[in-house]
Length: 255
Image 1: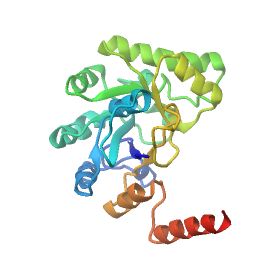
Image 2: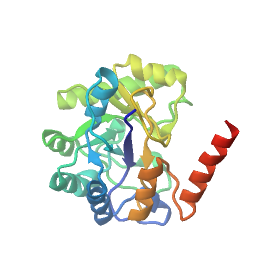
Image 3: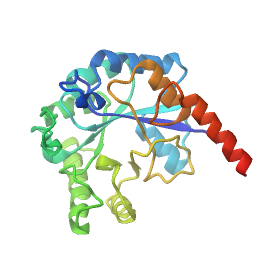
Image 4: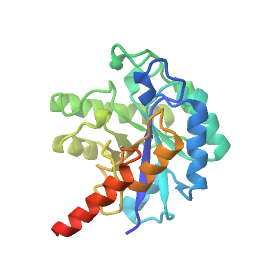
């Protein structure tokens, strides 16, 4: 069965603190990552094409990979967008709509950065970037009342559709947190595909509302990115290949 990967980024900027390096990928590194994908034989595809593959059996190339960016930081426009255009690579940005035009206030004591404006979003949309829902407030959907979760999911979708004049049917769970009720609410709202933060390869038999994504850290050098692509994991390290194959051998011996 054909497998594909979805990569998850957040900010594309120089990190201001050591802890922020996990989420802030310097523009030069982001560019190097995307160039390496093609050099290693990966085929960048849109998340919309993956949606069609999951829902209607549309075709995917071998070694398909989709690029996603969570939250909607302004640096996605300033830094990521020109690189994506230059390399002709499709991408999906998941928007926490209540913070647009403001800052990443939900991150508390972390460095505060500006979020995208609707003017910037509109320009990217006109040039092929796809936008999905990421709730209104970037809340923990599995920890709020069902009525609030429903509103967070549906209001986000409506805002994006009203602003861009197009369907919004892609979603990503903030923090990767969800439960059975959350998944049902996303489906009922009219989304057709949703991304988690669970690592791993995807295939057509996976639940389209719990697709797996690989987290690409902002400080991942190319060799760590290649490991994540090869093994479908968020882990990386010099001993990863040994541990991976030892685990597979152990599983076969127990079978």
